[in-house]
Length: 440
Image 1 (cartoon, rainbow, N blue to C red):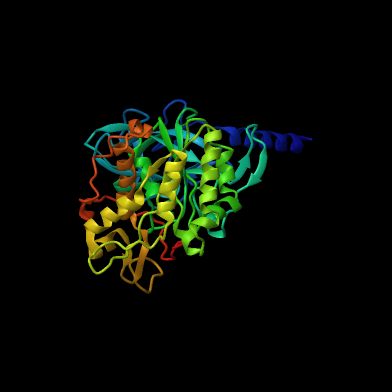
Image 2: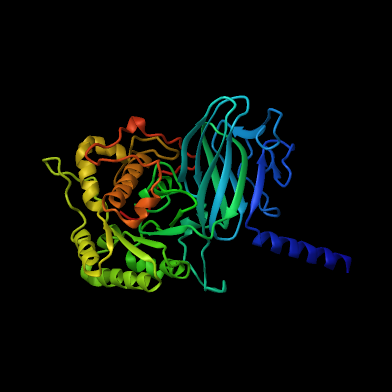
């Protein structure tokens, strides 16, 4: 009987924890602010309690005395990852960063290297509070009452990703990351921008691969807007339907949310023409989004790094960009012409400089990479960042309703004058892989 009661209490405890959506973590030592959970350098992730660090090697707890919340912190000489089990949804995360007796420099990314805060520096003795807003998802499709009605058919490689694992994972990176506290709270009000697309949009987990989708959150005001990236490598419009990825979105999207749609690379590669279902599906998605009072936005696929003898970009996407432009006009929906903007961007770079925006690296630049990487479709972090700026520029130039949510992180951008790669800041994550993503 006693054992049964103990089991029941454990079950109820785990059930209640599974429903918990708000947390207050005090990073540093056991000297903890009232109402906060202590997180020290030995707080390794434990499924039973549902939070902790992915890897505790190299972590240091530092206590400077004084204020219980901001007088101590966690730091490391390498990127470190903190995870917490929470239900899917949108969350505000409030961070206290800094050192009461020194300076700090912190970059924050979430899930699969989704950029949130970049190169946040604090002076000696300065503690600053920063807020980010994060979309957390799982692969279960639920109806409005929360009952499971289906599941997204994940690819085997997706099961290793940090964005389908029922955890919120925060990456702390840079020269001197110092984290004093982390507060997690649900956000029910933010407009959600759902991203659909392929490997040029996906939140890529592994260095050196990247996409514009994972850079986009950096350019929008937290609390007001959140980016929900559902793109996946290798997908066509049809495959996105067949794997029920779009069904997941249809059952989550709310009135006033946005649906960004960028497909073409793999539809073309699969031997499809724009007449073999591409136009039909685009129109169906637009109609469905409008029925749900969401706002569809079409995004033309960016160019590949293919130049002619005059150093002009060659169109390798057949009539897919034109088909999307025509449908945007017909259906009276907003269009972000990333195809045209990328042409301007890459031609401004030129054939050789453009390699620096794509995955072009000599052999042995990354683990298990005996041969050179020379990919003219997929981008590195610098190229992805520049393309994300093109997306934001289009929103601003067209005065789309999303314009009012663009953050101060975005400075006016001219694709005719790309940012210098030397000025681009990206401390690499620990996850690296030379295997090319699906799709081309």
